[in-house]
Image 1 (cartoon, one colour):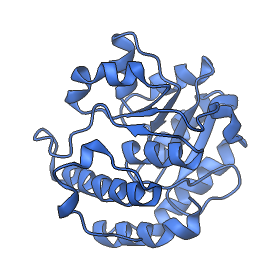
Image 2 (cartoon, one colour; image 1 turned 90 degrees about the vertical axis):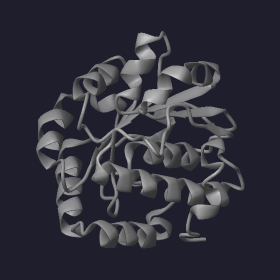
Image 3 (cartoon, one colour; image 1 turned 180 degrees about the vertical axis):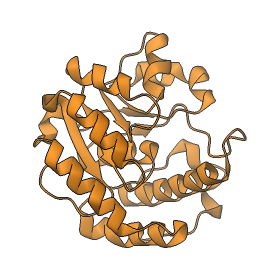
Length: 227
């Protein structure tokens, strides 16, 4: 997905949350100064592969086999640690550096790609952590317009950004261990973000002409968003 396609959705997210575009752009520019170019070939060849988009909901412990059996595992945030504890490695981590940045640093130094996201609320984390990453395994991302080495494959939360990244590089079937849009443990802001994640995945499945099992039972309640 290119930014021109994603931009109307991005603007709708900004409007809904009252976020400022300028803050995202400042974060992006800081990341651009710290990052180096990363070719998407560095992710490996995901074309036609079954890719597990591992979320960090408590349900992940029950869905480990789904990740284990996939060809490629892309994990959001702390899902990496849950999977590692159960003997499942990941092929890519997607994070906005808010929970386990040490894990992200370690992965890059092991040669595992990490998509590190810069947005208006995490500028201090970008400044602190991005310089510690191994550049060769670091893909800097933004939700604003891409600049220099910073890319925008689409998405908003760590989890749905992982799905958009997988789609962007030609993944085959997407499966979703560790997702719970109705997690009662999250606060109001996170609940709103999960609602947007569901809407974005609904948009993505229509674009891919694919049906994601995690949307079964709620698909009819999703607005059509953008075609």
